[in-house]
Image 1 (cartoon, rainbow, N blue to C red):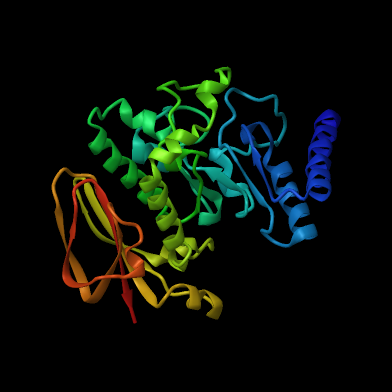
Image 2: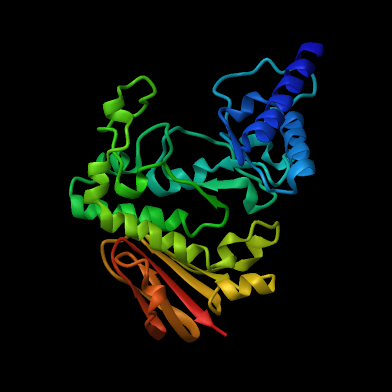
Length: 319
């Protein structure tokens, strides 16, 4: 027990020292399940006390690889115990990742979270395949793959929680189809800027989606009540839609949302267009699978929307 206490003290003091000396804004814990719940909550409390609640990011991988040497009442800070962690400690959501692009590793745990602040939504990270390489395994047609790519990005960028993406994902980063490249050469792991030059349209699509998300408090709400904002609109094979209460909780956020009090978001993975019956009122098209900047000059529609094949459709309704 003494050794465990000293180890925890060393980890905590290291985090606090790095934060103070190097002005670090947050920490990502690899295999966070190797650390215990008590220690992670203590790290969160100390950072909040020094810098303000939630000012420093704390998140990690919700797994531990193998069994740990924990004894007594110590519980690993993993996916199974996320409900015991402070709500400002986030975890990568492999449920979201696998739902979008397919399973990487089989997992049978179910997330029971306190708030979206505990969820890191993503489809690619340094481990496993890049998004482009994963889709390349199942979709040979490049144009079709590009549609799937934008849909995948659109889904996790319109989820509640904290979005995360691999550097270079915005320009279809590839590792040549390789999975685990921790010991691969720089030619495999580097950021290929020539690839970035060729994928300017994709980069702009990501930029537009991020710019839109920043104006949507209904998606950025990290509180425990955030789930109450979501209402299912429809659910059919290959196509789902939901409504989001986008009203802000304070005056400053209201200025940022451009007056959209309600959102309608459609994910269509089918190879054909889907007609969506809309709630009463006038709606504006904010983004779709081709253009993530439509919110700058939105087109109004009513009663029915059409979601193009393999694409996202985001609509907004003003008061």
